Length: 118
Length: 118
DNA sequence: TATACCGGTATACTAAAGTATAGTACTTAC
DNA sequence: GTAAGTACTATACTTTAGTATACCGGTATA
Figure 1 (tube, rainbow over the protein chains, first blue to last red):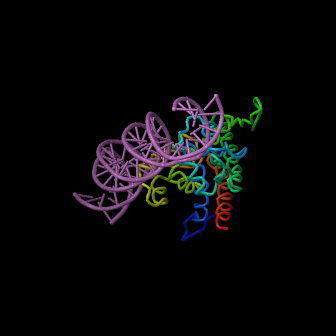
Figure 2 (cartoon, protein in one colour):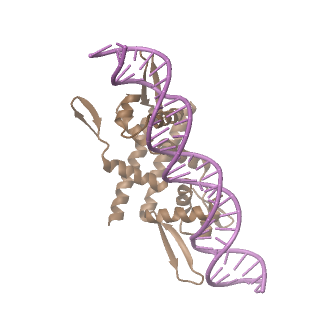
Figure 3 (cartoon, rainbow over the protein chains, first blue to last red):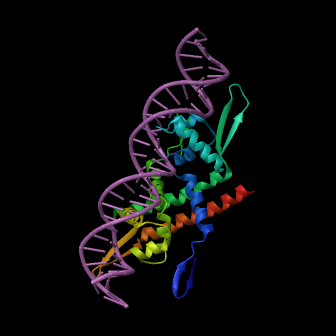
């Protein structure tokens, strides 16, 4: 993505491009989103299940992060009208596809660590 | 990556896996690393060139982020013994490969935005 | 001589992210 | 009736990220 303006190389990081990357960044940024997504990768989970799954997370952070993920359409929250109510969290289709991004990150991360070791 | 322990599905997000993702996250986290990497994608740049390239960045942040990127082996800093000294920054091979990760993020980001629009 | 460029650093601040600890309103099991 | 589980929220705090502004020693140009 580059062009020549008055003999100068200028790369037009189109805002589309940057916004898309930022979107992906937002989806997984912070200390807890990755563990949450990881935990939901293998099926729906309830609040307490997630809390138990993810060491050291506080209910405050779990609640906050789940809300953000829901707002971002990464996670779907379903309230079941049982007594007592049960609440289930699961990845949306879009949330599941983020695994491709994580795979790319793992691949790079491993290669990078190897290249640094040498 | 999962296994069965006493009838319970447990996903062993191996620390290798998590560390690799974190490594990639670190490389591009924060407000300025992405613009810096983007600017260096098309060749070596000097400090002031980067400063001009990246709107609103302060020299303090540029200096700090470049140091982090260098420590992380994403960016290589070369001091040329000229008068006055010139300092050049460029992506390492590993730094260049991070484009694959960004591509995956762009792809997901665009798909995600589309799926949310609908 | 003064003005500006180069590659930064110093100091002081604000804002955002995360933690610690406690508590709420409800339900079920003993 | 009391203890424990569910799905959270409230308050107050610390830590980290980022900003604003000024400055440094050196060099080059007018």
